[in-house]
Each structure stands twice: as structure tokens, then as C-alpha cells.
Length: 167
Image (cartoon, rainbow, N blue to C red; front, side):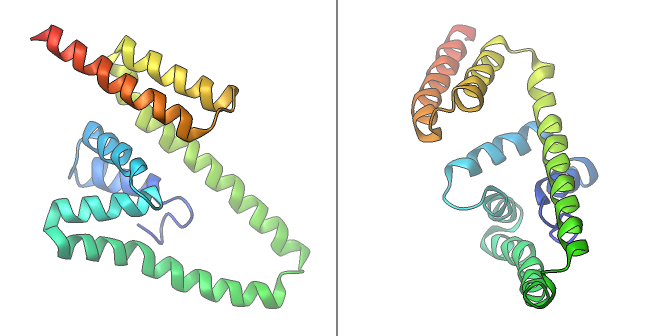
């Protein structure tokens, strides 16, 4: 996955874990990925460790971590050496700009796929919280820690109240 999704592994990870092998449902994947946002470090690396440990414990976590990071680290090291030598070539700069556009497109695609289970549920509370976070961060440009500090307890509390009412 790390070689196929170089620079955008989340797309390939979701496709492999949810769609191809069905090791997790779409909801389980989204919940696990959401948890990984709260752990220190890159989200996809956290996801690999959590997923690997879920499948095979500590050896699985180590295998998933190494499998995710080792190939790209080796490739980036080699590419950095080449770029240091040939980085001034204009065609190379244009090619790298095109690769950046592809990575952004992949990010939008996986975000949309991860959003679909939430939209299918038509949960008004979840959609309102989603919209509030989007406005706070995307429009108002409030700091992420402040938004999370407010929205996480609010969403947990609201879901707790709804769960108690449903019983």
C-alpha cells in the first residue's frame, strides 16, 4: 500500500482494508481513523499500528508500521539524492507540481468516501457537529486545539445523552 499510494496512502489503505479484504467495515475504519487523529504522530502511521495490533498484536503492529514506512523512506532518500543533483531542471519542477495536484485529488476522493457512511445515517446531530467543525476550522480559521477542546466533549456529551434517551 505504501508504494501504491506514495504520498496518499489513506486512499489505498481504505480500499484494501474495507473494500478489498473486508477486514473492517466502513464505520470501523472511520472510527479507528478518528481515534488515530488523537494519537501523536501521522494519522496513517497511527492507523497502521492500530490496525496491525488489532489483527496480530504487537508483531502485527510492528509489521504494519515497518511495511508502511520502510519502502517510502528508501525511495525518498534516493529521490532526495537525485533532486540534489538535478533539481534545477524545469521539466522536473513541472512534473512535481503535477504530482502534488494528483495527491490533492486523492485526498478529496478518500474524504468523500469516508463521509458517505455519515451522510447515509442521516444523523442530524452528527451532521450539525460536522458542519460546526468545518465552519470553525475551514471558514473562521479557529485553531484546531481550541475547536477540538470544545467539540470533542460536546459531541461525546450529546451522544451520551442521546444513547440514554434511546434506552
